[in-house]
Image 1 (cartoon, rainbow, N blue to C red):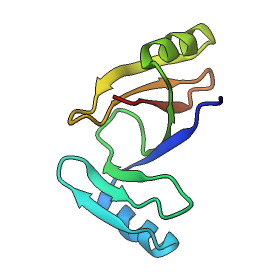
Image 2 (tube, rainbow, N blue to C red):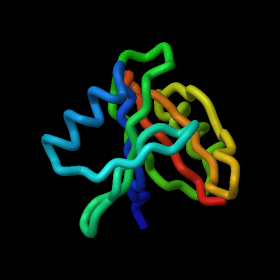
Image 3 (cartoon, rainbow, N blue to C red):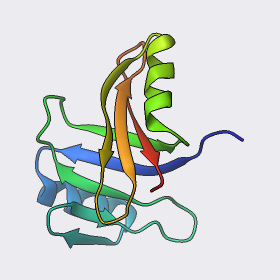
Length: 116
């Protein structure tokens, strides 16, 4: 079965400005979670996501997270196909699972998610 997209993340320069923009544009329901940023409700048809202030070396961006069985194996495979592993697996804590990231051969940043 193909790996599904399960989460997205908007890494922004100003989270409060972005929250107002996306709330006004799409009617998204957002809730602030201390230490995690703004959670975006998935509604009935969508996937959940979040908005966070960008603290990385990458410019503001949107990342999608694809659910995989094993992040380490997926990062190794991405590298064998010409991608670059960025980090992972990283434990999200509290039983939420693990994440990792890589760049594809064109430099597009992609996220990986593994269930706990």
